[in-house]
Length: 246
Image (cartoon, rainbow, N blue to C red; front, side):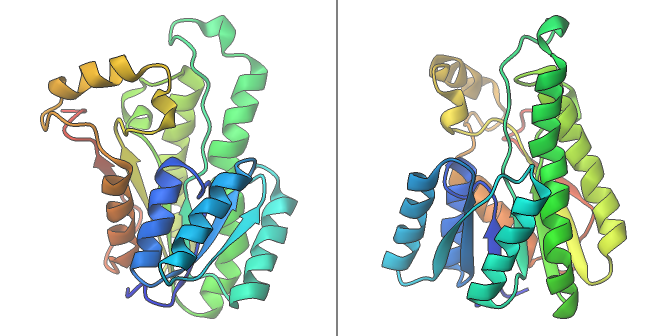
């Protein structure tokens, strides 16, 4: 799929991987809707960067864990751009809880992480699917994590939520075929603000990876866009981790 002049929605598009994906999509000619929940200033900065580079972009607010907010957001995008061709389900949250501390994995933590990381991705996919079906073409990339493969990560609920994202990808691939392709990119460690306060730990990890480097947000963004472009692939979980899981 040629991404030029395609309309793309990137959730959590104002920070980290989301920003990098939004900018890379714009470089490839896409019209970008940059979603944010609370990071309005960052989303507007991303939009301004795209516009200053000659692209088209808008910032759209919605808490992806709220179905009605998602539907309203997609309606706004349709009013502005006319359709949605691409969805990058990037918005995710975590809680840093020691894996063995089961008591801190409270019901509230489980609900918050599942609402955003899993249900939010489903709500967004469901909201854009009718427009992709109408144009007889569409592609979705969900952002998973190696935490969903290894069971390790910032917390037990986070790892389980990402395993659910991997399962959601496969189920949506079945549900939306043959018109809409659904794949998942599962990064390992990526240099983002999630490492804030733990930079020393990140730098210690890098030499132990096969490629001896932590992935950048641009690494992930380029692969997300390549996955959107690949027309012979659906239902796949693709790991990008510098060899971290080997």
